[in-house]
Image 1: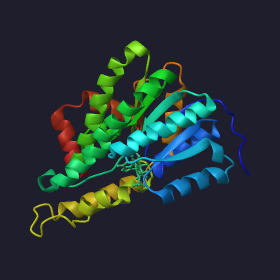
Image 2: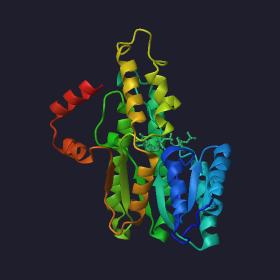
Image 3: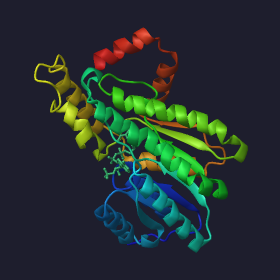
Length: 291
Ligand SMILES: NC(=O)c1ccc[n+]([C@@H]2O[C@H](COP(=O)([O-])OP(=O)(O)OC[C@H]3O[C@@H](n4cnc5c(N)ncnc54)[C@H](OP(=O)(O)O)[C@@H]3O)[C@@H](O)[C@H]2O)c1
């Protein structure tokens, strides 16, 4: 049975809406009456997202967009499509949710540089490219920019260096942008989830290294990597549901005075205090024991 949307809440663009947090957020926002332009990378995912929205009676509120954040032409086409969609409804753009992301894991000594470039292309440069492209519409609509970072944007665990580096970069860019956009009253908000139960940890990039597929046969990390793989699996299986992140994104979009960061993890206060106060030596010791 479909829910009746409370219409007129505004329009948002969300990247990476084919699965996990992005898809869950797209459907939650539509349920709450938002018009959602959901970025996906394949026609099949576009059809699938539209069908999922249609199945709960929200077909008109979720519009899939072909949007690979590393593809400048697709970004330009997505902006044009959103402009047309907004004009048809006489609406402004109320939010851009930069959610698309990948994981690259493994020892830094052995990470293929092409993988390192790939994660920065998606998780960092892709965010900037999409943000630059949508900023005119966000300015016109007084919209908010919500960047999906991670606890790995606050603390860099071993064997997640490439992923953590990309999220640290995202945090830095978001901090600069937040102050740069103050004159226009545009908000930039970081969401920092801990492990969330989504497909991301099982996807190719994360598994390839953890699977030792790319490690040299005589790698000094041969014994460590299976342990790290098991640790990642454990963390992922205990992850919070994606709905928790979707609710935080909704709060970030609607709170009259949103915070700069929303940390979403178990033992949030302990984590926040640890990040701020723990000396490097203690942090290294605990992280080396955990890995
Ligand atoms: N899951 C966690 O534990 C966790 C924790 C903290 C932060 N996060 C962050 O949350 C965000 C969403 O991740 P998730 O856990 O929901 O994973 P997910 O289910 O794998 O979703 C990632 C989404 O990003 C898309 N994507 C990947 N590369 C892209 C590109 N070049 N252009 C456009 N879209 C692209 C994927 O599309 P395809 O389906 O086409 O691959 C997918 O829709 C990421 O930024 C991630 O770093 C996740």
